[in-house]
Length: 144
Image 1 (tube, rainbow, N blue to C red):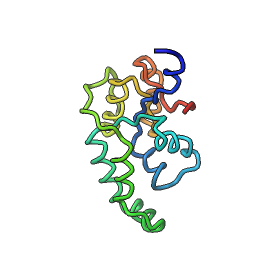
Image 2: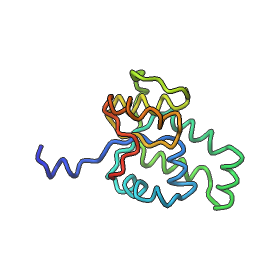
Image 3: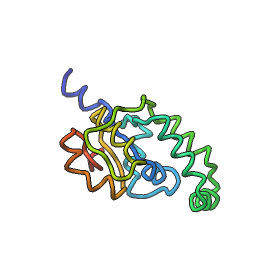
């Protein structure tokens, strides 16, 4: 493969639930470039069915429902973004490093299995940056 083809290949990324909320519920300005990258296909967003289930569950939390209602944004619309842009993968095997927060492990496992960048704001994930780098996973890379 030549350099031009490599430059145009989508970057594989795993987005944790809070990042997905930033993209389509909170419309976080800092997430605008990532959202554009996902929507344009520059990012290959990898996810699992369990990640979609978690998103659906979180969208029903009272504080999230309040935000959705304020924006006149149905939860189904957020799930439709997931369905349109996420590329479902099978659950990944356990990564060499475990996260203290078991809910975050699925994101780590998938990122490690696919050598994908991992986007997360979770403190239990952020403290694993060096361990994830040893597995070939960039945590919250700035380049899109």
